[in-house]
Each structure stands twice: as C-alpha cells, then as structure tokens.
Length: 239
Image (cartoon, rainbow, N blue to C red):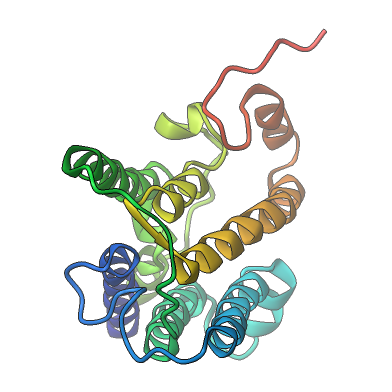
C-alpha cells in the first residue's frame, strides 16, 4: 500500500509540475528555461525525449504487455507502477529538456493573456474531474492496492458513460489538446511538444478503443455510435 501511495504522490506531483512547466510559471524550470544549445541539437534531443516518453507509455498500457508484466509484479501494483514510471520519466524529461525559445507567438494584451491562462487552468481542472468520472482511485492505482492490502477481490463493474463521458468519449484527451495549445506564448520548443503530444493522442486513441471493444464488447460499440471521440457535439442519428 505504501508503494501505491508513493507512486500516486510522484505521479500527481509530476502533473502539477507540468501545469507550471508549460506556461513557465510556479516551477524551477519551465519549457523555455534552462541551458540552451544550438537549435538543431535541441530539436534532436527534445524529439528523442518526447518520443521515448510516449513510446514507453503506450507500450506499458497495452494489454499484452500488462499480461507479461504482471508475471513479474503483483497485478495489484501494475497500475501504480505505470503511474510511478509516468511521473519519474516526466521529471527526467524536464531535467534533460533543451529550451528552444524562438517565439512563434507572444500576446501582449494582458486581458487576452489572462483569458488564455484561465482557459488553460480550466483544462487541467476538467482533466482531473474527468478522472473522478471513471474512478480516480483506480485510475491512479490506489484502489487496486487497497483491495489487495485488505485481501479483497475487485468486483467487476459494468460499462457506463457518466458526466463528461456522456458528451465525449475521451474528455481527458480533449483536455490535453487544450493545455498543449492554449497558451499566450508559444515557442519552437513548446510547439514541438504540442505537435508530438497531439500526434500521439491521434495515433494511440484508435488503438486504445480497439482494446476497449475487445474488453467491453457491444456496449462500447454502441457508445461509439452515440458519442463523438473528442468533440462534445451530438452525433447525427444513423439511418
């Protein structure tokens, strides 16, 4: 249980650090801070860092990897380990990140800047709220560890789409788009991260949905027909 709490603390703290990292506020090193090298060197280093970060996460989230991984570690610790690795690798990315502070845009109007920062922070708050829509404690691995500590088995729950999930199948991903792109300042370094994060979400989401169809079956297929993948807009009734 202590392991799960530690993993939760590190994972959650990494998300809080990312809040400041992307807007160069509240944290020791923002996305445009740190030691600057040549543009091409920085692009190459950052590209490799982000690629490695996303590849590791996508591999660890796949069911085939989980089946092999849980032969080495307890199944109750699988999600906590994923959260721990997520947090540690993000801090490693921040440490090795090379700023490329060539400006793409920088808004001078203080009111517009304030509005964009407010939207940005709302994106993070909605993202956290979405985790509670699907069981925040299981999402971060604490419930699995607690049930194992109490020597109880997890009870299967049926599929349901509540709250934000009634309007979009992936509200967390939608919020990632918001926090990556809604910024009063955009540099080449920030742009690289935003583009790669967007591409990753667009590639991995259909793969994750195939996994969900395999796991849940017809209820999720019906859900796909009713609710859009990202945009919270009503779907046209199929004829």
